[in-house]
Length: 501
Image (tube, rainbow, N blue to C red):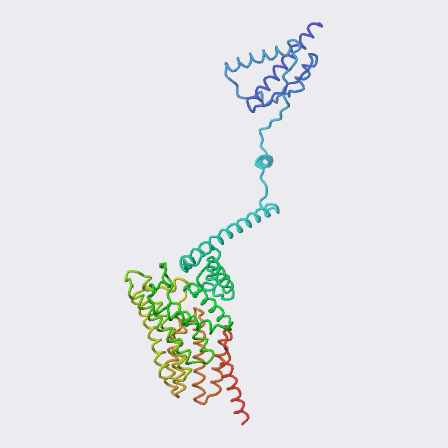
């Protein structure tokens, strides 16, 4: 009886081991597991195996039946495992970990696991915002720096190509100072910044052995005096420019190189005495005009016109009909001649020689009409390739202001209205360029309308026109408002007398 009970207990234990092995094999087929090895004695082998296993559920026994070959393999494997378990006391016994398996899926748990595996974090956190802001700032600084460097390089190459320094002037630093002065003088129109660079470049050129009487040094000195004139520093300018003019006139009698100052393709000898005379007259002539010395101003302007005509002759001798630069250069020569003609007319008007002044102003208008007809028929003319400024704007309107003023002085108010109407049409189309000459022209036409009203006895309307002329200059930040203020004060005083009477 006792032996039978021991046999049954051993049989139950064998069946339990086989069942646990089948359950573990089914788990291994579903998902691979990790094997753990645990060192134990023979006495607790059975307890470790039973503790590391879990009884299968009824659903696992009711799985799809396997084939006969699979059953034979599994039975042989199970018998071998059972035999090894009860065979002596091995040092290492295979123990399977506790596995929990469920066919039900939890979407929240899966999303949390995926988030942990992918390390997904919210985008608009303070830390990420600081990162993105810092990277954007670095990109802005980088592209700004690169763009500024590219702009400076191309500006320097443009200055070297368009305003070359004479080869006789040596010194890398001095030549670069000349380019920097040219940049502020011509492109930026800031003579206060250009003047110190011109002066430093002159000192360096002279220390390098440049000839003080050469055309290159005289051209540099002329630029210095022009900047001083624009800044109102007139001390000594008249004497220096008069001495320079005498030297240039002596050089003009000698053979000159081909003029190429306004051309892009410069020649090696690109300076000429006629070119410097023309530039000098633009400073010395207004100096005498501001002093009231009209005879001397007329003399200087006449010398400038002769120099420009010589320049036009040199350009015409080598004019190439297939070269667009030659068309533009010749048009620029006409502009220089027209502007000097206009300034000469101003001097004759100030001298009350209305007949000569009228002829010169009408010649200025004809120059402007010829320029516009050339643009219409042959659109190969370009603005100034260096400063990109169209000097023809409002030049004819300024001449019309003087023509209307002379007719009013002579008492012909009806004849002056035709010039005023024609001139205001031109200034209204050119005002968008914000040209100072256009602003003065519009103010001048308003002043002439006030003079016509004053001649007709309508002092109230004349005062309104004078105030409009003054306000137009004042609101556009123009200088030399003394004449406009005097007209307003005179009409206000006259209106007060009328009211008192």
